Amino acid sequence: MTQPLSSDTYFEHERPPATIQSDREKVADFVSRQRQAGRKVVLVTSGGTTVPLERNMVRFLDNFSAGTRGATSAEYFLEAGYAVIFLHRQFSLQPFSRHYSHSTNPFLELLTVETDQLDIDSNAGTPVPKIAIVPEARPKLLSVLAAYRECHAKGTLLTLNFVTVNDYLWLLRTVSVEMAALGRRAIFYLAAAVSDFFLPTQKMVEHKIQSGEGNLQLEMDQVPKILKPLVSQWTREGFIVSFKLETDPALLIPKARGALERYGHQVVIANDLHRRKFEVAFVSRLPTAPSSTGSSAPSVQFVEEWLTLPTEDVDAGKEIEVDIVARLVTLHEAWIEKGTVAINQT
Ligand code: 9Z3
Image 1 (cartoon, rainbow, N blue to C red):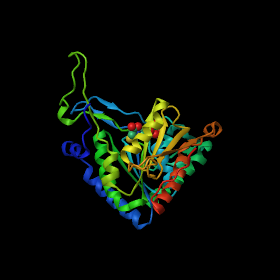
Image 2 (image 1 turned 135 degrees about the vertical axis):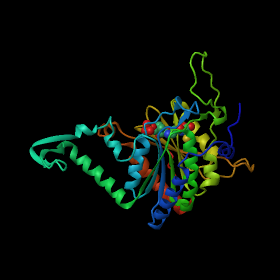
Image 3 (image 1 turned 180 degrees about the horizontal axis):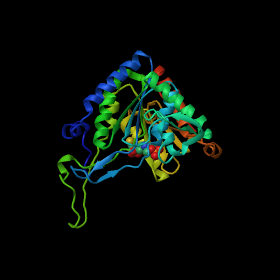
């Protein structure tokens, strides 16, 4: 089995996206404004990354994620007073507009024509029927609009986007290096679904892969394990929360523990693909205790805290991200004060 590339080697060989410099400037400016305002900042990554199969890309592999977890969590972080850098897959769900996507509450269905009231057509100067929002949609729209306007007025949301896993890796490095200035007052909430395998540019064909040449065989390289440099080089004091997605329930907790052991970050939120909307587990390490056998090797112990939404809450439309974010805000406060994470064993 070939080992994954180190992230340094990766960044030496793969080119940055064209917008990297302007994105860096936006982030630097945003971070400095939020520091002046005394706000904590969270980076929320969201949506799936793609892996192009050709340099002139016609085909690509994609990772599953609608962007619901990220977009929803971003709104609750804003509500909790955080400034949010929302790094998302182009065209995936975004905070606020997610409530009115083409499939959820389609825009045209919210409108009604009030035939008894007239507006003046600003171009023709003639009377036209007035368009209004249907009454039943107004309370929700008003509250979404109020939160949206508040975050625009305060300048607390910066949105950046990626398409490929290469865009994502470059942006994550760039953003996290800029966020290092925030020290412990930064959260990294890594909900994006990131490809594990990619085709290096050197191995990629230039033009569209042709059919008629038999089966397609691909050998992909492993994407570098990006949490490692994130934790140990780019942002040493940040509160780092990664997500672990599995479809086999038996693997969920062992894989989450494995990630904590390997990277040494603060929390893994483990979710099963089919239960992710109502159940997640927070997994963390206990502060290292000296080994009981007297050997110098430290014994790593893990704690899990399960967060489950009761069916009646799910039916009433409650989103699990409310509880995820509330819990993280508390854990982050302790992290800022003491530099430790204390989740409850359940
Ligand atoms: C997640 O596990 C997210 O919670 C979901 C959210 C992608 C399931 P939706 O956007 O779904 O609400 O539709 N994200 C992390 C997935 C991931 O790729 N994790 C890597 C892994 O599991 C580690 S970074 O190995």
